[in-house]
Length: 283
Ligand SMILES: Nc1ncnc2c1ncn2[C@@H]1O[C@H](COP(=O)(O)OP(=O)(O)O)[C@@H](O)[C@H]1O
Ligand SMILES: [Mg+2]
Image (cartoon, rainbow, N blue to C red; front, side, top):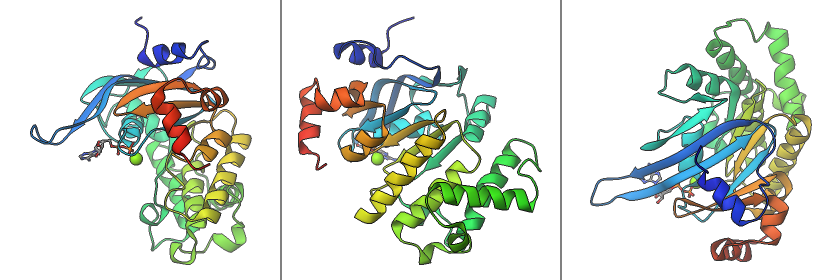
């Protein structure tokens, strides 16, 4: 098997710190461009990236470096022009493929802005319960979410896990929530069906400072309680990355710039770009 460019980037940094658990999600040779020939943007150029069971990988890089495009492709929300994504060894091939269905079933996704990702007409309880109902429908087990009581217990458990009092929040609507509260409801919705892997793309960037702390606390608690779940977090907040991530992947202009264990990479960045990124970040 050819050496991946992620491994090459890792090797530049020394020992293969990225090794460890079983690979859950693997991208190879991902290329993606947008626009017409005259206005073509090459968003990703031959990117390889692995996510292993139980690890939290942070994807960092400047605005427009390809973080969202890469993670959307890896989670089956968008397709690559070239390259492959494998989930638990199976090729993600087309929206109706068995592997794509399995990934949908086993992944939880948190978007940047909770006020656009949550339905404003739905209470927190309903939004989170919907996460279970959709999961049950996709798994073909109409009743796997259990009866009303089982759903209620799962919804309350998910709210508690993100630090929201279930009695207070189960009937609350997004309009009566702060950004930090709404984003934690969105996280509870992503977590309620106990995914194997979670994606959070800039989950703090649409909220204020107190919301940032609440979301970081919620994600930290989730990491503690669900140690086998893998997490991919896109963030330019290096404080967040330092607290949550085991490993960092640095993207620059659609390419992997470098990758390494969090503490090592932040303390001892190899490339000029990463050094600049770390120096420029307020954290
Ligand atoms: N739907 C799209 N149409 C056109 N260009 C896009 C689209 N999505 C992303 N791009 C371009 O691709 C590049 C990478 O974008 P993105 O993945 O969103 O970067 P990041 O998340 O790191 O800020 C940018 O130049 C961006 O303008
Ligand atoms: Mg982005």
